[in-house]
Length: 83
Image (tube, rainbow, N blue to C red; front, side, top):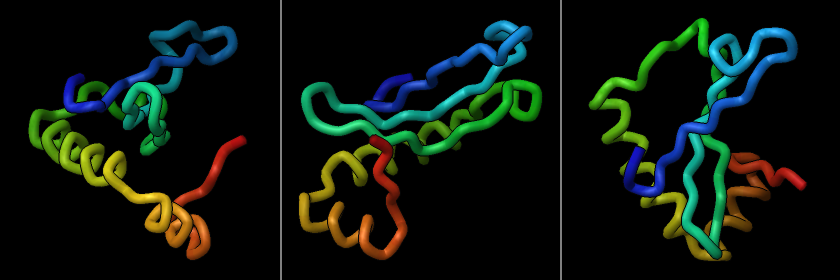
């Protein structure tokens, strides 16, 4: 999608990718990965241009967080770490 924004498709058991889920990710190789938004394909078909611009702005902000900013957001619950 550009600007470090990716849409990842996951199949739902018995439904395939068309009936599955979509995840919006912010990713910079060798650095950070954020799962930002998840939705079922049936609820939201396409990402509009204005939404994509917003996602690109958010991706830049998230990927530029310092370690201290990440730690603060983890502590106050604005971010959750997935292991």
